[in-house]
Length: 332
Image (cartoon, rainbow, N blue to C red; front, side, top):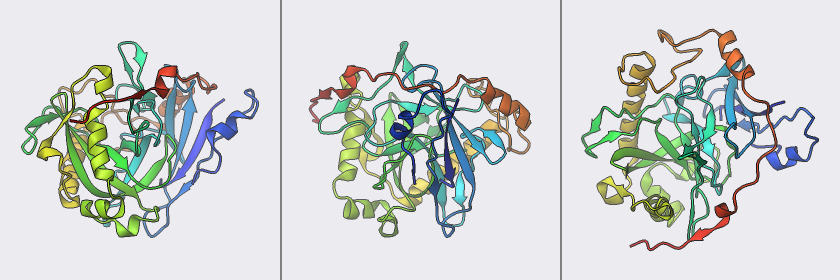
């Protein structure tokens, strides 16, 4: 049994909760058919297939295209429309949720899984007045923040992950959605001494998208959101005993032009990574089915075997009671 959800270049018609009302023995299909207008992107189709039990260590979200399993990191193109600078975003964490999900760098086909630290599944704390993630959160495919590169603007190395994106539109996305976004700017979080770019973007289908072109428009259209975002990132680790996070540029969000330069740079880093030109990157699985001249490219049958070996989908585990707790932290 598996749970599947279809994205066409990026509306959810059946919710997970509705699917759970069906008998557990049935084949469960979750079809979040997310459709992007042709004026923004091509009709590329991606399918998210859930395996294992949500909120358990075996939970994974794998990805397929029309021909079978793919890697969301390596096989989903960065650009939905390169000329218009519209990018694909892989949604790892829907807004208002707490489970810290991320693309698994080490595993074949790089499925989404829940992060584990010190043997425990990770959940972000609710720091008053915020609940969970306050935007849809995810990453741009075909990007990599090189830990061997010291950024001249931040004076810190990359964090060894695909570049993060916060999507600020009104729709609550589903985990595994692939959506087309317009990049508006970026924050530069310094997380435990590493540069951790946080791109600010909006789904091109959002009603506000035509009014949002740069980071200055965010404050006009969504007043208070940038301030709340900086506060969220500064404080979200404090309940876990960590210090307040710092930002480069005094927490100022840089504009779209700056953000696009960062995206171009981390895309080039990814190209070197997937080509096998980075010596100290053995911790990242580069298996893919589509990248030309990549030594890690495999036949579709091999990718299908990886997915076939994943555990069947199962009902979610109960969320821990601590997920509902509110933490009151001074923002000073």
